[in-house]
Figure 1 (cartoon, rainbow, N blue to C red):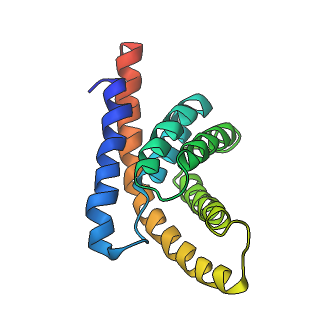
Figure 2: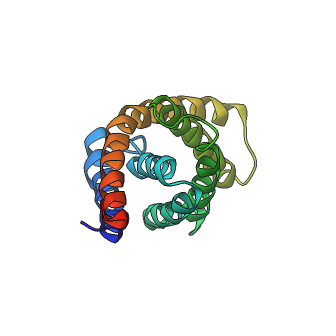
Length: 167
């Protein structure tokens, strides 16, 4: 599989797993965000430019099944790709702890922005209380799936790099 195949088909496969396998299996709104895990994994391996590209593509896939305005996840994915791509050079990327912490941060930020836009910036304490429970469970799911997805992305990234570099 070449680099374009990895960039297109793996996120597409993860999208279908996320939407049509895990969502009905677990039941409802709270399920692992496999595309967010893939985006962060690919960003930590490839840097800001690869992160922006993958963020826009993964966000576009998420926008197809979203009830928010079209482009919300595409913009958010591009911003996540840029931000985490910039900090990956400052911090050690050899350990799994940075992607695990980053997926929790990205889950909290994306969920909070979704809450803001869904409530039209009118938030009550009851909404925040239920939001905290949802975000906690979503963060646990994303953290559980981050390690295998990061391992798969690392393996595919080194195959991709060997193909480009001719090694």
